Image (cartoon, rainbow, N blue to C red; front, side):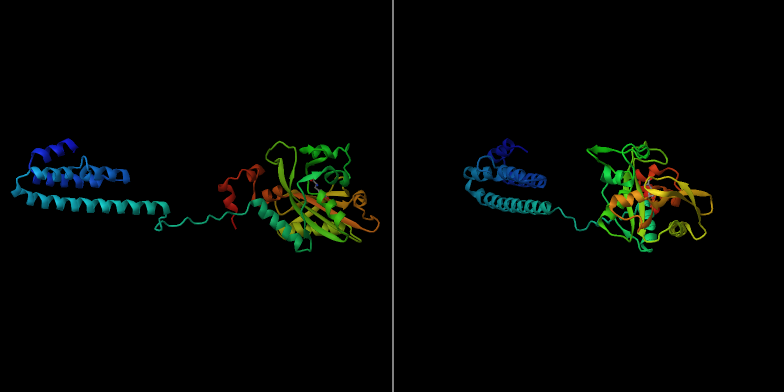
Length: 341
Ligand code: DAH
């Protein structure tokens, strides 16, 4: 409905009919108002000084015969009251809407529940391993993953030109700093800080310059052990690791020591375990080399010790029947959720 039509009615037609028509039109337009600008628009179209349809009706009254002014005046006044009331109502509604929107809280929505994660299978295996040793009195210690050549190699009886460095190639960070290739440097750090006797277990992440395949990842997890005391022999090593294998894989588990080689132990060995379906290599170990004791200022005549190290990824793979350790690092929750306890 446009103004000209409205004015034409007010000017030339029946004013009572125009009042009725404008009330109907107003109701329709009022129902379409969505915001303050729309509201002002409608107000101007009906009550505006210049182009308001109702204003035009009042203006036209002076041209009416005196006998019809009373009826038209009452109808026009009623219409003005109704239009004003409706406009005030719309204004209040718009204000309420704005207040609700600024809070934007629907209290009828159900809340989002917490989604609990699960421990990683390597963490589970590590916790089991560590708990076997802490029950035997070992203390858990940690060390830095960015390590100095002295701790990672030199003090462990692996000099710069030693061939053992080839199988433990790593990522070099400049100077003599590198990513540790094993948890063994924590042996040195601990012995530098503490006097014997001591028994420690060292869980930790290590790095190697390896191409990933089913049994290698460039970063993996080890657990180291070291015990230093008087009159320690290889029988103590054997008994400790045998207990460990039985605790992990069951009391029926058999173990055997095979000769091995590590620069920081002498003699060195590999511990194999057989829990019922064949022998598997489980732990590298040996008696602490006198050169290592000398590097930390322990008297090798007075103290003896044994040390061991194992790949926790490998033990987790055995424990859970996994044939490709790369899956441990893919963060696929469908895999990881299976180990929920
Ligand atoms: N550090 C060795 C490695 O990463 C594992 C190891 C073997 C640790 C014998 C030891 C040990 O403490 O006595 O291959």
